[in-house]
Amino acid sequence: MSPLANDPRLYGQGISFPPRVGPDGGVVWSVGELNVRECICTILRTRPGERVEMPAYGCGLDRYLYEPNTVATLRLISEDVQQAIARWEPRVRLDDVTATLNPDDARAVDVVISYTLVATGTRERLQMTLGGSAEETP
Image (cartoon, rainbow, N blue to C red; front, side):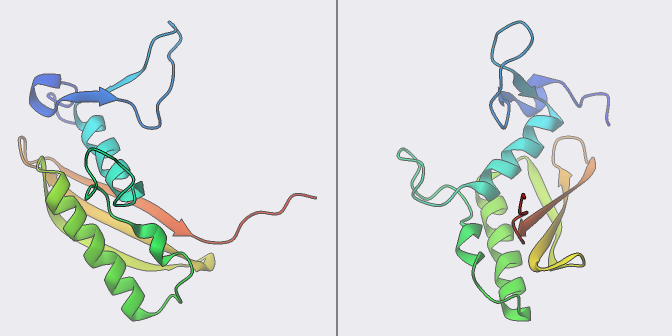
């Protein structure tokens, strides 16, 4: 992590994602590089139309939930992630986005995002898993 990682003047700050209350009873804020990472997660988890004031905001990955995990679907997921981050997160430069089948669950997709923080040149990597099986409880 860079020395400027938690400088709110460089990367900004916002309510943490997911929103939570801290030990002092106040809202927890994310600051710096963590704020950038959390904003990317928010973009990916938001469906366009979900935010009233910003109806185009988000990525809409939920639409792939019941699609077959084909090469074409993986390519569409990767392209949607690239377009959404390029549009909504100006603090990063995308280096690579890959969508691959999860080795443990053929119904799940692993998305790996490699990006560079524009202000410092720090390289980061974010991975998330989409879909998959629901765990059953006895």
